[in-house]
Amino acid sequence: MDDAVVVGSGPNGLAAAVTLARAGVSVTVLEAEETVGGGARTLGLGLADGVVHDVCSAVHPMAWASPFFRAFGLAAHSVELLTPEVSYAQPLDGGRAAVAYRSLEATVERLGPDGGAWRSMMAPLVRQWEAVTAVALSDKRSLPPGLGSASRLAGATRYGIALLEQGTHAWNGRFSGDDAPALLTGVAAHTITRLPSLAGAGTALLLGALAHATPAAPGRARFAADPARGFDGGWPIPRGGSGAIVAALREDLEKHGGTVVTGHRVRARADLPPARAYLFDTTPRTVADVLGDAMTPAVRSALTWFRHGDAAAKVDFVLSGPVPWADPEVGRAGTVHVGGTRADMARAEGEVADGRHPDRPVCLVSDPTVADPSREHAGLRPLWTYTHVPADSDVDMTERVTAEIERFAPGFRDVVVTSRCTPAARMAEHNANYAGGDISAGAVSMWQMIARPTARLNPYAAGGGVYLCSASTPPGPGVHGMGGWHAARRALREVFGVTVARL
Image (cartoon, rainbow, N blue to C red):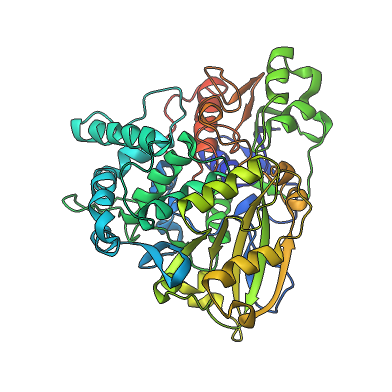
C-alpha cells in the first residue's frame, strides 16, 4: 500500500507528488490519459510530420516566478526557458501595435504620451515582483510569506491599489490613448470573464509585472543557490514545448521513488488503490462523484455546486513561415493578444458572458519558433491559438480566428498549411478538468478565486485524508504548481505528521 495516491498528472498533481515524495512519502500518480501533463503536454497532433503543439499552456512566466518552481529548480533539471525580447504585443488597426518589451523603459518609450502612466503603475510592481507573486499565488487563507520587509509590504499594497483601479470602471482614468489600455486588457482577457473585473486586473498586473521582471532584479545579488539562476524572467517558452516542465517533474518524482501509472481512469472509489491520503488534481465534482457517500453531505454539496466559467476553443495551425504581422515588432513577441482596443475586447468578452459568439473574438496567439527555432521542422512551424466562447460551445472557430489574425497580419492565410479546431465542447476529451471548455477549471471571479472551491478555512481538505489540489483550488489557474504544493504540505502535516515540508 502506498502512503499517498495522486489522481491526475497535471502540473499541480505532479507538484503535489514531488512534494510528498521528497518528504519520504511513497506516492503513486494515476493518470487517465496515456501521456502525463494535463494542460502542459506537448504532442504531435498529426497535422505535419515532426511538428508538435502545446495542447493548452504554451508560455510560462510562472515557470521562473512561482515559489514552487523556484524551490524545485527547473534549471537544475535541464529545463531551458527561452525568453523573447518582446514579452507580448497587441496589434491594433491601421498597422499599429502596442508592445510590451522585456525592458520596462523600452515599453515606456514606445507608449509615448502614456509611457509615464505605464511606468508609474508597473515600476513598483516590477521592483517588488516577488511580493506581488506571493500575494497572487498564496492560499488566500494566510499571510503570504516574505512580506516582512517594509519594501515588500509596500509592493503588495501598490498591487492592491492598482487592482482596484484597473478592476473597476475607473480603469480608463490613467491613460489618454488606446495603446496602453489595450496592452493591459489583452492580459486581463486571459481570465475569460466580463471586463473590467478585479480577477482580470489581478491577472493583468501580475503577468504584466513579470513581463518586465527578472529573477535577479537590479540591486539584488544573484546567489549561486538561487534555483532560478540562468533564467531571464519575462514570458519564456520552454525549449521543446511545455512538456519539458512536465518531464522534469516526472523525472524528479521517479528519482525519489514515486510511480506514475497512465491509462488509469478513476471513476469510482473502487478505482483507487489503498492509501493513507488521496490528492485529486481534478475538478471538485470529480471528487464528489468518486467518493460519493464517503464524504460528509456538507462537503459533497459544496463541491458539487462549484461554478465553472466560460470556455476556450483551441485552433492549432501549421505555417510555412512566420505570421506576417503588419507591425514587424509584433513578430518578435512570444505571445500576441488579438482583439483590438480595450473597448473591442471588453465588448467581445461581454458577448461571450452573455452566451454569444463574437464576430471579432479575443484570441491568444503564440508562435513558439520566435524564441525556440528548434520547433520548426522541414520549413514548417506550429502556431498555437485559442479564442473565447460560451461554455459547451461546439462551434468550429477556425475561420473567425483566421479572420482576426488576418485583420492584423495581411497575408496570414497564405502561410497557413493546415489547421485543426478543438471546440470548447470537446476540450474535456483530452483533459477532463476542462469541463465545457473551461480551461481555468472554474469561473474566474474575485470571490471564486478566494473561495475556491469553497469558503472553508482549509480549501484543499475534503475530509478523511482526501485533498483537492487542482486549479480549482487557490491560487487558481496557471502552470505554477502552487495548488499542488499547498495541498501536499497540508497532507504532510495532517496525515503524516511532517511539520516542515521543504523541497
